[in-house]
Image 1 (cartoon, one colour):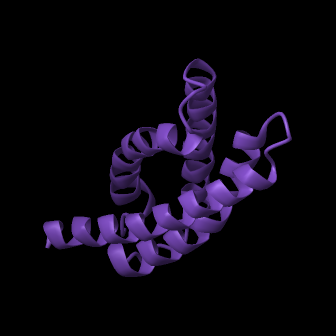
Image 2 (cartoon, rainbow, N blue to C red):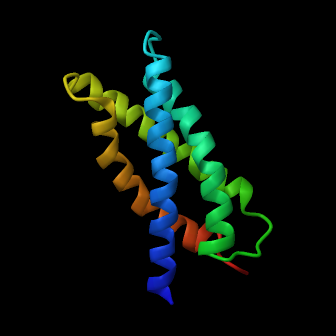
Length: 127
């Protein structure tokens, strides 16, 4: 049962990540001439992908009937988004010859693991 939950979480996360990374690439290209293009692209992509992720995690992964999950979830999204955006931007400033999408991959992997435990034990925990 626990493995099944984690496998579902991984599958939903992969779909959410694909949505996020494709949108990040699109918006990073659109905003290329802006000074903070990575920040803008991260924020817009994360908002869109998080809507999908929230709905799927609440209903399919954690099967939570707790009604007070949306605000907690979006606090986590904002914190994770800011950590991602500023970490990717900082690393891209250091390693400017590496595409921001490549830098984003390991950053998001680390955030992913932390998010699972926070969602499982804090956000979607059934009372």
